[in-house]
Image 1: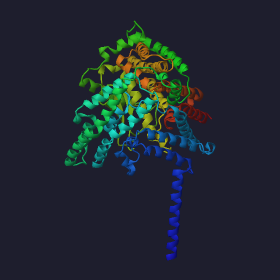
Image 2: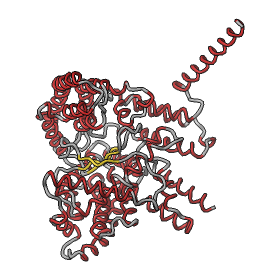
Image 3: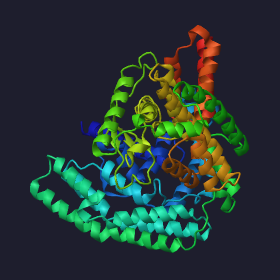
Image 4: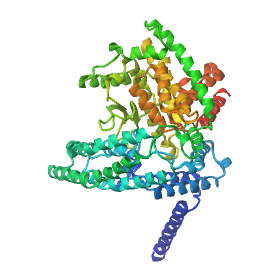
Length: 604
């Protein structure tokens, strides 16, 4: 018996040693299975980004929560380490024989190959961005992260929140180091960005501490928790105020001081052609966002042609509605000021807007059975953009749900001015941001089974924004915009994306001025000047991103038309949508191969 126990113990020890050796080999060398490599790539990047982990919540269900007490390192040293890791992972991926993989694993290989390869090819442009900008800069995104993402349901959650607050000044110091590095390289933001960021940060700094979004939402979350004692709540409130005064506000003061000095150095509001190797960077930005090495001049003239086509369709609807005189843009501007199309500029009017969006989303959610047989489990909510950031935030945006089901998808609507939201545009915006647009795409992707984790999270702008724009067309085809003015709202939204092709390439490749782009967009769309200025300035700080919408939509429509033509009566739009959605986000060329393979298999 003793010999048997001794022998069994030896076997267990041997198995443990073998398992340890396998684990170490998977971590530090080429994993024996490519699936293990896929997960290693994801884990290494995720574990180095605690803010992302808090946002997606994939570790909490298995009891891992330590990341919730840390902010993500924003130092130049970490950025360099990430670039080195990308290069190493890309080289490791190439050591696997793609031809020996099954088709689904080949798809994963190709997606990761494209993503990593694009990062490696763009390494020279690693600092060609503006971490502090008027749209989603760290100065506004970090407070919004505390308010919208960090949950406070338990005493530990509250303690983690407070610990993170004490790290804000360190994070901002890291950001500051990166800004100085960019300045040394001659990569300076446009002047308007500096001016608007200063206004935003001064507003944050000037808000009474208890009313500051980071403290106020923390206190609100404490009040809703039933697991935290009254005494602890009082203590935590005091600690939050202390952390704000000792660690958060000093961080903002340093950024404000730097930007006040930077304001004396920046004079240009031009596109990225003004930067060192700006033309090469823009070519890279085009590929990064459209997932194709597209020519800026061709994109520009495609936009011009699409603007003309859409204007033709809008013209007839406007004439039928009694708007005959003037350009399409001029007539749309008059329609946009029609009192019948506007909401009251009051708290009640803002509530009416939110209620209308919720009603439209609920309606279409119950009428899509003929078009979708795969739906996300996660729900979606409509919320106003936080008051702190609404002045410079976009008109609307979507935030995906937590992967553990603890937070729904959220469609954020900017209510800074009710006159910016017209009744005829409500349906189209709701479909784009929520159902069946971004919410369907993002939530379905996050809920995929049997795929590497990176495929549930990795974004590709042309795919995701192309899908959302495509669903605006789909909703009209499905009969949800029978009112001609609702269809006019859809066409205006598509026109808006076609105009983006013109002005983005115009400013960054053809050297249009900011004012020239604003004038063109105002004339073509009839949008409010406030909206147009915000959009043009967005394109200037995020070059190429605005191209992705129309490029992605045109590709998805092209693929659907191809499938319908080749399959005839065998074409099922629900199956087509499954093919597009249930593989997760991917480059457009890979999506095209996926759809072509489905057509071939179904047509065989």
